[in-house]
Picture (tube, rainbow, N blue to C red):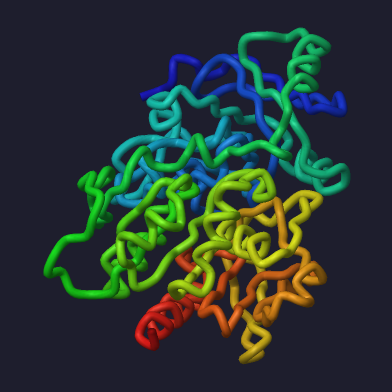
Length: 379
């Protein structure tokens, strides 16, 4: 069904005053956020539902979007998380046997603006040159100076706790196929497999699927759960999830991770990697325009193998800040030499900045889940 908002004029106004023109294909109103780009040729549904994109307006660099529609199986959370979506050309008629509805219907369902007709190549080049910046996408206003004033009043993501908006309300047991599994404060008695307590800072469903497929029983806990309460569940291992925003703003989670180190085997992904670095005494910094896409080359410094990885982050751990922390640097990004992985062998803890569950390689990085299982077997 065609969106009732299709064809309305839309404006993207950036904080530096740059303006891009387009037309809506879904949603209406205005959206504020950090404007970023994703280089994936596919995966727009996973991008839209990934909680790590909370607070961001996402532009897809691949020119055609919507070709295969939306299905119920590829959700990474229970709802759309991005603030708005920008594409070069929206494909109204999708073609895929798994598709249950169009991209426009999906965006309208959650009241999210989708805009086409913007020169996404020019927008991407501008962001790469000037850096990710705040912006507003509007279909209900054309006063550029007023819209820019709204952008300048928007605080952005630096120093802001975005995890509070995406973490779960209470503990729940993960079960594949259920959008909201059983709310429960404890494990299922008699179920085989290692017990993994997953700290939810915006966790992706596919991470939970991978842990379950690895034979783990997973109990998902809110991000503000204390170390004492996590350990009281008697887990075999602890997982630190991905999530949105500035890791340095999460003092309460950093302290929790610090109190957990050495108590149980720990595996962190993306934001979880950054939180582990901060808990070990390191620093994080904001990348100029971030890594978002499914084709980032990462070298495993231990084996020498190069992995094709999926990434979504705007912040990074400074490896120099970990020189006295007893950390081994295990992975590096071959595009810009930023840190992509580390381990602390004395604390049975390791982490990666990229997303091994996303399978762009497609299975280049699944060994990391096996490594987590082996750590739990040793303890």
